[in-house]
Length: 259
Ligand code: IPE
Ligand code: IPE
Ligand code: MG
Image (cartoon, rainbow, N blue to C red):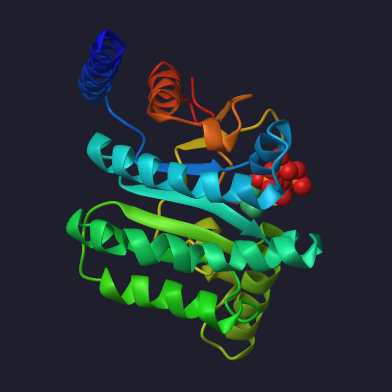
């Protein structure tokens, strides 16, 4: 009984601290676009002697929490790196599991996303995705297309170098067919040929699990983003960690090459 009361008090204290922290963060401008390389699911599972896929399952729950909090904070877009063009190199059972996660995630959370005015989007190569994965994503995109709250953008089968090459080829084709002149080709035009054409560049990039690299993620778009790396593994990433990252962002001075 006493333990229960103590636990209740502890939880209540934690949630009021969280609420206070959210209010504090909201007093200063928050990043408009946050991109996250969600890494460390495998190591989280390994530490518990569980199969790697258990880490992916746990990681999915974190996506829900972080989406909700991002929306509450007034962040406009959240891009989550869920599967890279290089992740096909993993064992088949792991790839199969990862390709089932969008269905599982959206199967349970889509009504909540609709309710919360979230718009689901995707960047990445759709062609190679299994049809069941693509159907789940496309249904979510369609069901939320009229929402105008947080953009929840999944990077799925995404690779930045391939994206840049494809954009280059499209620019070349439009030049050859006379739609573009050489003088039209500038940074703004090139950006509009990328998969992120309808999103502003990320203001803040977060990577979990202690790896300090981009792993082929948004190489063009991250040119002037603020980076925040943490050793926390993705399944352990909680609301306080996102608040910590946003607070660090608020204390950065962005100069974009100026003084
Ligand atoms: C990130 O976790 C999820 C994906 C890349 C799909 P990992 O599966 O890379 O976890 P680690 O890096 O092996 O711990
Ligand atoms: C990057 O993580 C891709 C995703 C988080 C989806 P990886 O775990 O695949 O990256 P590397 O292999 O450590 O660079
Ligand atoms: Mg990894």
